[in-house]
Image (cartoon, rainbow, N blue to C red; front, top):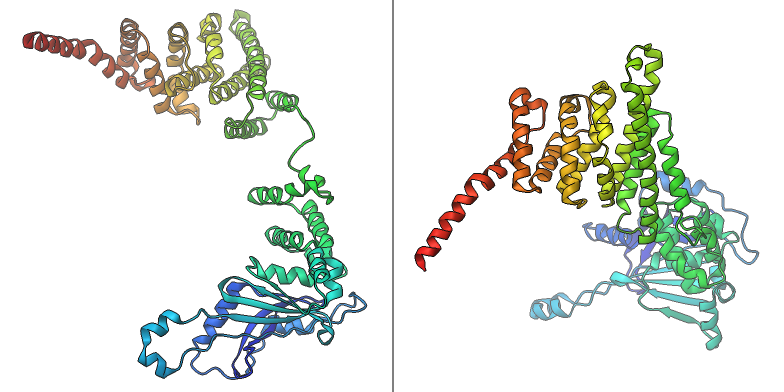
Amino acid sequence: MAEFKVGSLDARATKFRTVPIAVTPEGFWCCPSQTVLQKTVKNQNQQARPKVGASPPASKASSLQRALTISSERRTHSTPTRSRANSDEQRCPSADNATSNPPKVASERPPKQHKISVGFGQIEMSDLRVVLYGKDGVAVKMSVHKNILAENSTFFSDKLARQSPVSSIEVPDCEDVEIYVETVGLMYCNDVKQRLIKKSVPRVLRILKVAELLGFRACVLSCLNYLEAVPWAGEEEENVVSSVRHLQTEDYGVTPILKRVCSDLTSPPNDTFVRIIELVLKSSDDRGRREMKSLVLKLLKENNSSCASSSADLCVETLYSYCQNCLESLLTLFQQASDSDFSEQSSELKEPVLRQITLEADNLLWLTDILAGRNAAEEFAGLWSNQRELAGLHSKLPTKSRHLVSCVTARLFVAIGKGEMLPSKDTRQLLLDVWLQPLMDDYNWLQHGCRSFDRTVVEEGIGSTILTLPLEDQQTILLSWLGSFLKVGNSCPNLQKAFEVWWRRTFVRPYVEQQGSRSQSGRS
């Protein structure tokens, strides 16, 4: 970081201000940001008696800059850059005028302007002045060379070709003065790409925008090469894609960049999705399977709204095929584990079977969660409610091995309670008849041995499902639950909220309606 003198262009002004400025080893400088400029000017204005032409104390940055050796790699016609800068602020009205008519002076006082003068290459041989007018009254005058700008920029080449001779070009309403100056400085470099190394992605995108406006093809290509090689993701990814996509119509070769985020495949990658599901379901490592199931589930929930309907249908069809496989495998394993001979076998022979039951039930729970999240679990609810044989064998297995099967039932009740699916009355009735009791049998284990089990959500789901049935069916199920609850307490679901609703529907509502009918008949 070198030091840069900013003074008035008016010969009558003698006050100087110091503004930090970045100088490259090759010799050209990068314009200080407007924030730095304004902050420096503000700090200088606050000084009571600024010393004319005084240099600030040497800093580590400036000492390091003086120690740099100017690169020998430069254009044959170019020498190390000499930078000069001047600042000009509108002079304030005299004290007499301010006293005689202060309101008028305050209202007519023009905004402050800050002028900077910059030179590139051999300053004494410059033959063109380019003036940039930016925001907040900042103006930059660049002393440049016609042949350099015409050779590198179609914008300047056209400007110079229209008029002859041309000694000055003005650029009004310059959106990014800092980057504009830096981009012009890059025209004096032999290797633009080398100058972009270690710059941030947002800054290179700004340079790309200005280079495109100037028709600085070498710089645009260097920026694209940088973006193709440097890592970027998240918000930067969206900015990069939006910045380069429109360049596809030009001969810049942006395809390698866009290939990072999009494929040439024209059809939805359903085969890839099937492969991912298959790999997760067949995983043998507990931790890896658990983490990838959570990740895939999260990603699927994120893009539910953006999935095309055809792709979504293919995904659901794939998921149902795996559900069917898991159900068939579970039934076979339950039959094997409930056989009388199985209990007499050694633990070494029983353990693989029980582990496989846990694995298949966990896979089925994951698939159920995906289907419910995609509002596509109605068909599976019908399949699950018809598994009477599986439910009948449920009580013959150890709770430790079978409890994940009850988690599948609980997830379906939650989906119904949240409105994630709308199964028919017969399906809801059958689901309660077949699977509510096995769930209640495992409830104590689920509360204390399953970390992901949310008792409150499950109980609300069960209660909501019961309350969707006809009142007589509600009564049958809730009275059966009441008998269990009075025996084991919190070891079974607490359905008191559903019980209260059923009570009001049974005992209070008829009385209120009867009273309303009598009142209405009395008025008539």
